[in-house]
Every structure is written in C-alpha cells, then in structure tokens.
Length: 79
Image 1 (cartoon, rainbow, N blue to C red):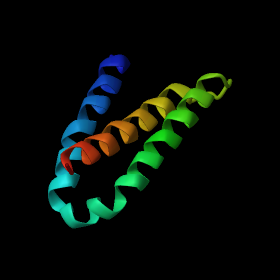
Image 2: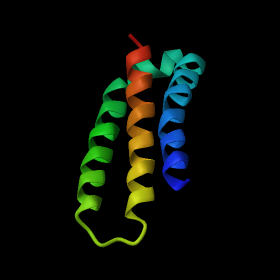
Image 3: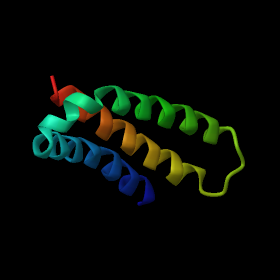
Image 4: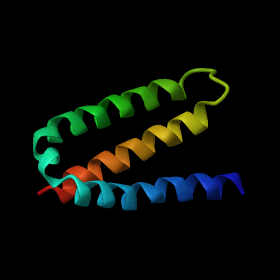
C-alpha cells in the first residue's frame, strides 16, 4: 500500500510541472539553469541519502525525485 502511495506521488510530479510551467512562463526563461541545477543537486543528495542509515531515507528520496520530475517537466515545457 505504501509503495502505491509513493508511485502516485512520483506521478503527480508531471501534472505539477505542467501546472507550474503554464502559470509562470516569463519567469521560467530566466530560471532554466537554476531548475537544472536544483535537479542535479537533488539527484546527488538522493544518491547520498541512499548510502546512509537515515531512518526516513526512502520518503526523503521519493520527495527529492518528485522535485527532480517537477523541475525537469517545467524545463521541458518551457521550450
């Protein structure tokens, strides 16, 4: 049951990215590089968290992947 919840959260990253790209088109042009940098940092932190003994590492990693999916969707829709 918990796995389905996390999959739904990850899939919700796409509509959130589409929504954000539709409401702030002008700002995205200036923030493309920052969104890409945020995605790269989130990926590095997620990989780093996977090697730790942090108690809530799986929910944290899923949250970071949600951020990555949302940012990359915004970048994709901005072109």
